[in-house]
Length: 270
Ligand code: DGL
Image 1 (cartoon, rainbow, N blue to C red):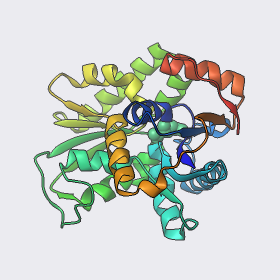
Image 2: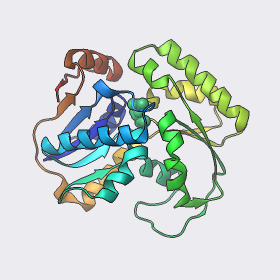
Image 3: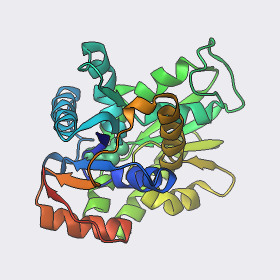
Image 4: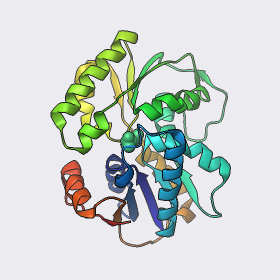
């Protein structure tokens, strides 16, 4: 048994990096569905079907707990999977809730009614599928009232990052931030609601200005996973050695992942 980390492609590696730094004794099995990425331009039904297949693969690999290290999968598939029920002893968790808890300064498991929070104007940057799901606004409404969320679908950014075109990715970030600021000129906080975007955090920060607090997920998810495993030690096993699986071409994905994380990563076929 090990903890599974699922993403459509490489973005989840930002989460994998943070969780493995925080929990070095935990074996993680990473699965990137590179053959079907990007998810952000797919329909909710397609994203759901692909996510179910990926999570099943990680369960087969001996993981009892799977983290959807992908906002698009968390937004479009998680609730449906949880409502349909998962096999006995298995769990699947997403990356959006830890971020919202940090934003609303609520503790894990605080189920009190939604209340006013300090933040009033929040900019959300995410894939088109995440934005159209409105899952972020729905989860936020369970916890906070009076927060205005302006969401910007960031078409093209994931493709530019996955193809290693940093200049294009920066130009796209700049134009998406400008588009958002035309609708919300003074956001107090910005949420990078896609696990690829931490790689462009500096570009987002510089386009938004130094006074906007930029939230990204990796460290928040790592802290929340540590807390979860402390409360559910049975979900953590001794497990196999860490593994990187892909539905794409292992050699190509390994090269890209090595550039992406700036350390050697070797993927094998899922
Ligand atoms: N990294 C994923 C996310 O967090 C999505 C990338 C994609 O479009 O596949 O939303």
